Length: 159
Image 1 (cartoon, one colour):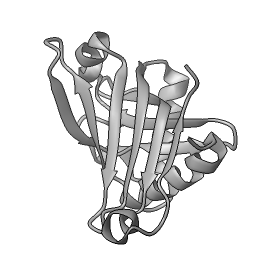
Image 2: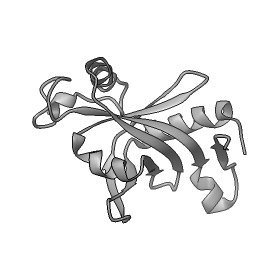
Image 3: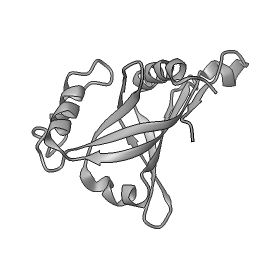
Image 4: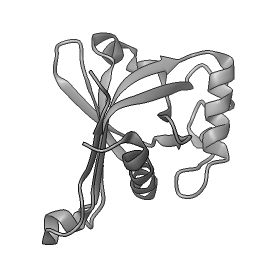
């Protein structure tokens, strides 16, 4: 098991290169539900936080359990995974900061959130920030699966 400081930068590099993640939640009946989302990850050298610009319709699933799984896959079989605690954040300063994070984010993860119907600005009723706090990360280059070369990086929070 690696240190967060070793795994997080490799995770962010791969996740931002792949862009789209399959994110799984659990519905109120305990059934898994997956959808494709577009997180941006922030690594400050100490902690890793992911943000998703989304709609408040995720409330019911996150009320069931706040744990989500974010899995990235690329055609070269590069994969990375973040298992996280997720929280919808409704306060105006956070919503504005996340809006700006996406609007001013680097290619290919940055985009203008106003392209989503009903999202005119960060105070739009259909716009909310989803915060992702990982408790486990895994980064596996496709070369590990295809040729047995390379290294799988993993990290898990204590406890």
